[in-house]
Length: 138
Ligand code: CMP
Image 1 (cartoon, rainbow, N blue to C red):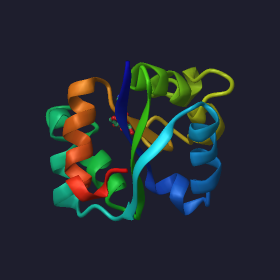
Image 2: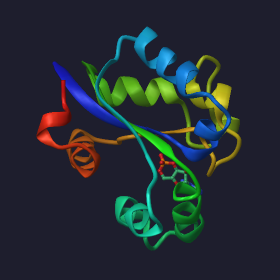
Image 3: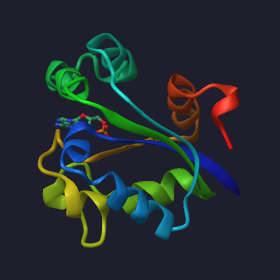
């Protein structure tokens, strides 16, 4: 069925001027952009977004990194959106990311890995709601 996922272009990729190239890869793979916003997370908001990782050793660095500069948040729509999008972005660790994936092309490290993608339909909904209201979905 057609459904939605949520993504962010992370601070490193925005800083390096890759917004266009990354959204191009998304659209070329059949994703439609339902919502799109450039914004900056405060450390508090970044901490809230990644609250599921609170106990992980990388949490504090992740919060610092994700609030270090602007990001681009998007809701994307496609058949089988969550799983297909995770295929398109590739492995979290860019060393393991396959050829043709966004992370293979743009990720610099495990942390600065260019993009986020929701890991379930439920989280896609929660994460989309974190950034976008009802009047910002088209
Ligand atoms: P993301 O898919 O946005 O979800 C959690 C983020 O934490 C991940 O991408 C990385 O940016 C960051 N991260 C840093 N270190 C790790 C790690 N060891 N395992 C998983 N994620 C990590």
